[in-house]
Structures are given as C-alpha cells and as structure tokens.
Image (cartoon, rainbow, N blue to C red; front, side):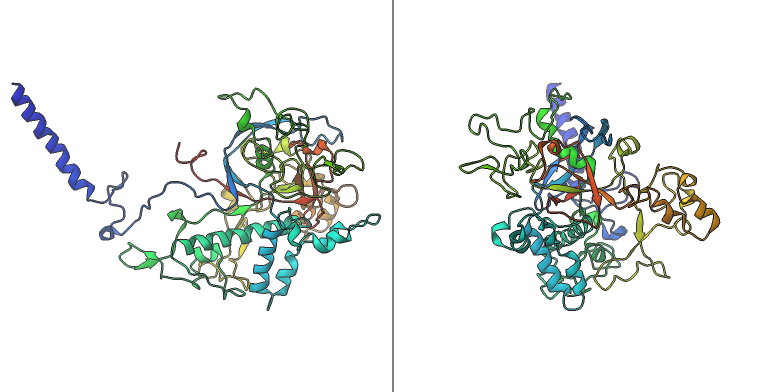
Length: 499
C-alpha cells in the first residue's frame, strides 16, 4: 500500500509539472478574455514588465498621509487665513533643495542655444529680475551684478524668479529629464543641433511629432501591422511632469512628521521642521548653532564676527544646515518658496480634505478639423486649450462645469461689485468680471493671480519658519527672498516597491 501510494504521488506530481513546463513557455494571458499578451498572432497587445516609478534627478520620495494643516503658532497678523484642518496628502516627490543659480543658468543656456537666434524673447522672458536686490537706502549693487552668475553663488538658491517663470522651468526640466532617459535606454542620441521647434518635448514625442535625434526607429511593436513604435505612457519609462508643489504638499513635507510617528500616532507635533520650540541645535556636538537661515532680530542678519549665528548674510548654500526627517534642506529658511496654489483667505475651509488645492484650470490638447492633435507650435510645444462647456460636453458632467475653477465657492456672481454692469451689457464676459470680484488694487490685493508662497527666508523672523504660515504675491512679481523647488506626482504604491 505504501509503495502504491508513493507511485500515485509521483504520477500526480508529473501531471502537475508537465503542464507547468509547457505553460511557462507560453504567453501570459488575460484574466478577462483569455487572450494572450505580447502575442503577435492575436493582435500584439503588450504587457510591459514594470517594477515602480523611477526617482527623478534631485528628488526624494515624500511618503504621504494625514496631518493637521494650518496654524500652530499665534495669529500675529490676525488674518485668520490658516485655520487648522486635517487633510490627506498623497505620496509625491520633492526636490532635496531649492533650485540653485547654477541649475537655472543651465536652463538659460539651453534657451539661449535653442531659441535665441529666432526667438530671443523666450530667453528674455526667463531671465530672473536681478534688480530685486536694489534698495533705496542700502548698498546692494554687488548682488545685482554677481549673485546670479558668479561661481561663488552657484550653489545658492535662485531668486528674482516669479511664479510663471518657476512653472516654465519645471516644464523645461521635465523634457530634459525624459530626453536623457530615452538616450540612456538607447533610443536617442545626444542631438545638440536642436533649434526652435526642433527640440525634444515630451508631449510632442508622445503625439508622434518629434523624430529628430532618434538613434533607432523605436522599440519593437508586436502589432502585426507595425514594426516599431515610440515609447508610450503605458511603458512606464517616461517620468511624470516636474511641477511646483501644492501648498498642502509643501507644508506636509516641511514638517517631516514621519520622524515623529509611532505606529499611527504622532505623539509630538512639531512647531518647526525640527523637534522642539527652540531655534538652536540641542545636540551636544552642535549645541547652540542656529538651525536655519533667517533673521534673528532687528539688524541681526548673521551674528557677530568670530561666531556668526547662521553663517549667511543673505542666502546660504542649499545644503547648509540640517535636513528634516524627509531629507529636505532649508524648509524653514534661506528663501521662501512658491507653491502652485492661488491664494484665498478661506482656502482651508473651502478646499477638499484629500489632496487640497485651489488653482485648477482644466485644459485639453487642441485638435485639428480631422480630430487629430494640432501640429506643435513654433517653439516645439503641443498646443493646449481650456476645456469648453459646449465642445467638451461639460454640461453632462457632475464634477465640473467649466475650465477655470480658481474662483470656485467665491460666491454667487449676483453678489459681484460688477453685477450692475453685467446686467446692462450682456456682452461682457461673466468670468472676466468674476476674476476681479475682489476689486484688486483698490480694496484688496487678492485676485486670481495671487499665488501662495511658504516658509521663512533670510529676511524673515523665526515666526515665518513655521510651515503653517502663508503669504501671497502676484504671480508676475518677484523678490530677492522668494525661490522655489520642484515636485513630481508619485504614481502607484505610496511607499514604493508595491508594499
């Protein structure tokens, strides 16, 4: 009986193993239809091996979660614009440091090389305003002349950059990073002859409107009707866009609460990006040293000779001081930083509690009369337009009805100060008047171009080093104390490697 039993077990194992051996040589099949993936004989629908999102240059992963956003310090200005509220932020990537002068000079060099012959205005538009350093009653001319371009300042944060310029830098960085990825993968060569519209743009490449610099025709296409194809989003090779962080993302990352978490509890809430309520280091090795670059008091930008308290008169190198628990440097000083959000005093009451943000203007690619994506513009960019209630059938949607949602929940248009004009002249575009409902420049500095900036700078007191504080400035303006850093959306698992 035992021998017979062992023989049956061996036969049973063979019956299991042999089919597995044959199956392993076959294509993986769909659990929905049973059709094979990656099989040219049945259409060639591909399933590409994928692990997880690659971390882009300069970025660190910020694991998301919930936190209390808003005020943790006294409301000194009585603006009541940062009422505490619990929100959830998804995982995302963020620059380890502020964008430096040298990184921005690389950007300017590329714009000069590609556009300056025929479109010099593109280069001019990107130039930081170095005149922001000037003061009527201070001698700051050396910064006007040297701060941006002298190698002594190459590792210092770029300033004089307005919100619009910061966004343009993020878009440029996206294309350069994705271009080098395709070169690394052997699909492109270094193509230094790029000029005008003939330059690599991620959206144009995905739309099949960029071919220059290709080393090979593409990657093999298993579609029996094609031989090669471009990389697609479905391949997971190209990275998402670099962008400015949202206000909620920036504030969440600045606190670095991951270092204060025990299981699901945060027993010690932070006032600053470091633990405790002091602005000096309590570690015995560094005891008494200032933890960030800000103004300690009236007339005191750096302390006394022989013992400079922060070793910086204006800005400092971006790796100066200690990083927070996410590994981010200077989240409480050096320069304040632009974020994506449009300013409203009641944002924390109005915004969603999941990925809160105000500033959505929904767009779509411009199509030609045949329904294909419109040819890229003279700078090599795909053309986008605001979604249209009529053409895009927005009236059938429940989640939004128009492209521009910046002034959502601002109030009924009937309460607008321009309501009388709108009633007298129906030809006036309602949205144009709604955008000015705060009477910008007369009774308020708030409008749809007022952008939030966060954190303290070299010019600020410690109060502004609290991440919950918030200020705003019109998006076309710049200062010697506002810089920026880029962020990137995290796709897939919040923690990486599918855990």
